[in-house]
Length: 424
Image 1 (cartoon, rainbow, N blue to C red):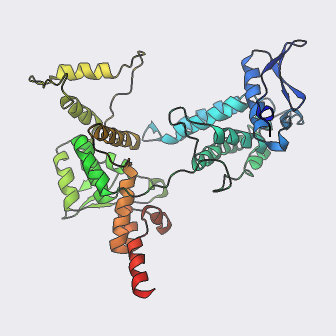
Image 2 (spheres, rainbow, N blue to C red; image 1 turned 45 degrees about the vertical axis):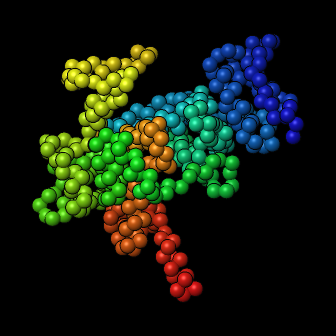
Image 3 (cartoon, rainbow, N blue to C red; image 1 turned 180 degrees about the vertical axis):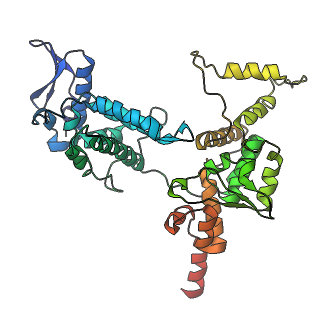
């Protein structure tokens, strides 16, 4: 195919009518008033549909569709998005705070709004959804220059389907709209140009120990505790004194919130002598306070940061100076206030603290493979599976299904080698 055939048609002015127009395969598609936001949005949508390759790159069939039913044609996709968002702000809430799913929906709805926001919601069909998916596959992140991975794209497309499922249940769109979207299957492994995400592997202890000195004592304790117990990163960050039963030799930590709580499952995590030794210095807090505080970790970092111009500080850091530093840190160069440290670590802030420590270690000449907190859970699951088989790994990790446990506990290849040497 020639270079000319791959060129994206331009947004143009039709002088006779004053409308915006784009010529696709020798046919004109009119987009509305030239220069208006709606015409630019229509241009993005038409090009996305044309570029997705359906019907041999012809003029998108949306320009030749029959008008929608009169009772459903009044609502645009933007209006459906707005109605769904009001519902989502009250539905995706836990303990009075928005969940991460709300942020995921925000990203998915940006794709939908950018390409089809002004289109009639009743005309949104499977081909339009595939056009959005095609744009996601070809999109590259500005920070990493990487394409979106296949699993992430499937998740975001699934969220768009859920928006129209809710809209159909509220009679905002005809049920046929959601039924049509449900026929779009997810991208399959090996049958798409989308990037495949790297599998999560257990982290080697040789990559953990060199990084611990570059962490605050609070983050280092979290890493050591997760490596020993196999907790989820969020469960480590939410530990409180009142959630730990210390009546026996083996303490039991029961998180007040966990992944499978909505299913009615309980989560009890045994804490042996090594885990008890790690958390004992943090038990002097009030019963309802979190053991691992980002605020304390930040104060420790400011007290122990590198000296200015190589000169060590002789005077103590007074509380007033810490407050000034905190106020200065929360205001960026553009005058926008940044979010101050929270009262406990969440999965994202915990991962960020580990990443900072690895980068700091690299600046000091300590080179290790980059790892994430969830890999600590994988490492514990693999270790327990080697010594206590799959059932032992399941109960330690707190998974209800053995199939899920197999995802966290890697197969012990050394055992397979030994069996092959003895019997094969």
